[in-house]
Image (cartoon, rainbow, N blue to C red; front, side, top):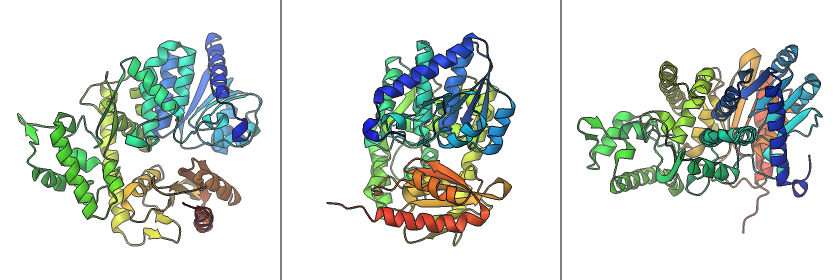
Length: 483
């Protein structure tokens, strides 16, 4: 891979054009296109974008959702003798597998994770890291897919909102006023200019368009509010003391129904409450920021708000119903949406049950010298362990340190998720790189971003993995110097 000073940002858009031309070639010759996407919100949003693009072009295609690429899945793809394989929101960290098994197939990767240093002649690799863009903060997998879709046909500009949803789902809004930056901001401009998105500044309580105020507060986990998150009755009592009308004409009011003064009163009360619980002022400030409203969506459905849409897609993926999420992203409503909304409700219940178990059960969450560790054993679903790590790292932990969460996975393996808190001075600490290096030495696979990473390991390697991470985090973080 080239050094950063040798990377040309223009190369990113050249690769997008190459990918778009390859896809159009296969569409024009009526060849079957196979698309493999990641199971999270970003991956499902990306699949919605490319699926709609191929559908509009009357292409022959199939979408497949996977947790990660491994040798078994790549072998299955090889046996199908595909003419074109497109990987969305994954693939960059599995170039060794693709090179070994798919030498004779035309490949496209539309990803934003740090890539391996492997060259594959028949691969069109579109990744911001290859062109000096930050794939952690500036663009997501859905964003890369959207830019490719728009290059295939300019009419696909109306799919920009899904790229925004993907970026929000990948927590790329950890910036001033919780706004999107870089290439993401260019995509926001596309959506605003076509009237698909409206950007405002408001309270960022979950379900601000769709839920009663007390439920919106109870559903909020970023930041996690001790004593209020997942406690509707306590949230109702908390808000009742503010002399705010919670109902109007026998209908519960939502955050979007409140006046500016009412919102300010709620924010002030929550900030005071968080402070009393020992939370830093920065936690409360994360409750105010930019909101991305999808103007063409029904106000009383979760797709109206960009962050809620992302949570909705994430729920579908984590509950192993990613196909429903993609169907909704491609425009399906009615019974499909009704079924998917039930999944969101069940997912939230399961998430809070896991959070309560972690917080209330002794020794599940433990502090080492340089990291926190969550031992999910066989209690926490491997598809949800990363979300648990994200929520707890965002605000619950008193001392800001990386958090490593482990739980049982299939075939005697262990799933590991790592997160770095947003206000942690990480210096040269790159979680994705060290996850990749350590897991490879222990006969596993891992990688990701500098602040969020994952790995899959043999069960017998988990203790050594945790010890190695703790040691490396300490050595890398302690090299940081401040003025």
